[in-house]
Length: 458
Image (cartoon, rainbow, N blue to C red; front, side):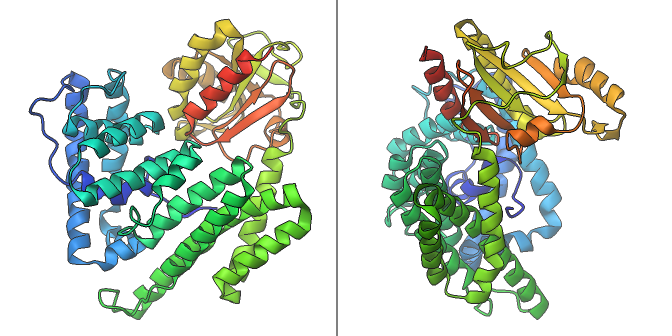
């Protein structure tokens, strides 16, 4: 369970983008002159103006930088308009970014624009590349630190943990909010847990807890905080919820690794250390249920990892004769669990399309699996009509060039693969062993690396 976030992938990058993009995007000398980039520049200016407003608010009211949730509470009346601005960015970024193959030769303003587009599309490698070039071109120390913090977060999301840790220095984090520190430390901790790096996972989990606790202990009676007692109580409730939800995700992931490598005693020792850092027994009690839920979720997701992949239940197939894992023996199979209403699922489709086109000849088979949702495009539908909409509207509309199966009854296959969130991608090797899974519309480069690795295996 996570705090409700702003749309698309901007949430953890807002502090850096607010300062870095606060000046108008220049057109003079730009190489981004296609009609698609011209359209993107229009929405980018609206976004840029919004960031300038945020920056001015933080300068006038320093408490907003220290406590980002306070910023959110003060913007409640304008959240609909803000959301519309954020949502417009990726819709215009997709066609614009098609023309950017290499980042060589772009100037400062073009790189800022490319970075914004890449982050909005979760194109982590291009966002990283743009930021690396920005770090070399920028001269303002504050902006350089902010870019390096953003690079650290991007590197953590990409699984490049050593690079992320090297950038997460006290110097680079010297003017970051406690929430921003917690997000970065938490990304490194969970990435290390995913990678089996126990010592690093425990170290950054402890850093996360300390940053979260420092944030959660902020004095709501300090100057600039809400004067109304009910508003302060609501903000305190938001702070506590953010604390418990984020701590549950991070500590739960590391506790799961402790248990899987050292047993119950190792898990209990780690949790006792984290409880000591929290200090407040009541606050810890609020968190334990979330930690247990995270561990149970990971048990479900990982129970089949490095085991023979479960056979699929009976499906109705589109674009192929009926498929089975037995019939696909000798192939590398990417299974994408999705739903028609899931926007992050749709964001992943261009990558699935690209992998189908590039790797099918080497032995990759992409398969999309879903089940009846009882609705389509916001309307309640029967199973037959929903299937027809999927076949005749959704698949052509999103240019799906891989086989799609709809489970005939229930969601048995979702359950057996431990699917708790979508998109959920798994990779099955040529011997039918489940070797990789990823939840969410991110880490495409990491997934592609695993595809190449499995294709190279004989």
